[in-house]
Image (cartoon, rainbow, N blue to C red; front, side, top):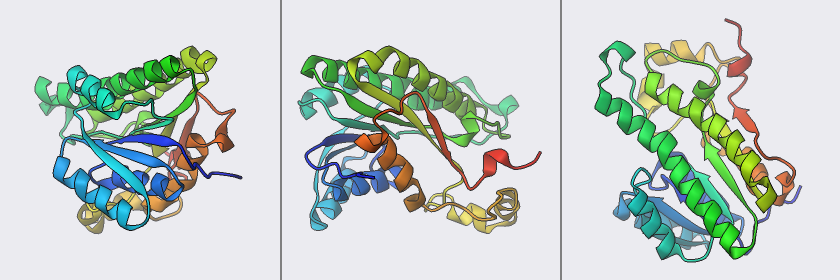
Length: 250
């Protein structure tokens, strides 16, 4: 399976840290010129430096995905339509639904759902204007397929993102634009490592059939499949990478 992407360009949102930063480095290692986008410019420049040090090509653009003007400015700065878009920017809030204020709901949904739509729409219009197809990978979550407590806004936004993925795939297939969703399970990162080391986190891990957290690199195969020509006949799909969490017994 050829997952080389030499000569392609990619936009990765939420690329200043975590999975977005990992995905950007992964694509750069496959020959992609990667545009890293997020609100934290200093962190983006640091990530670009790491990619360049490894022999890759990367540039940075400031982007607030929930702000239409920021999205338009970012695409104007990028210029050429990206062949690949990884819609990774996202935030969560773990308070109980009864205690969630409207501002928190709006912040989560605007980033995770509206932001993903604005970026995908801008990318699709750029690709159509350039007369070429492309691949959009929306980073959703297994919580968009199966609910979890204290994640009302996050789960709703990811469920909406999965359905949005299907709708955009249907509309844009005629333009050669594939749209798919990558749905990670519990993946260990710097942000959640301490939680999963505690009692509550260890209890959650026991519910995963493989009895362990996933590692960022265990998402690589799925992302490369959806981003490359190896997945040229895949669109509108939601691919879970979760150690079997979705099929665990109730």
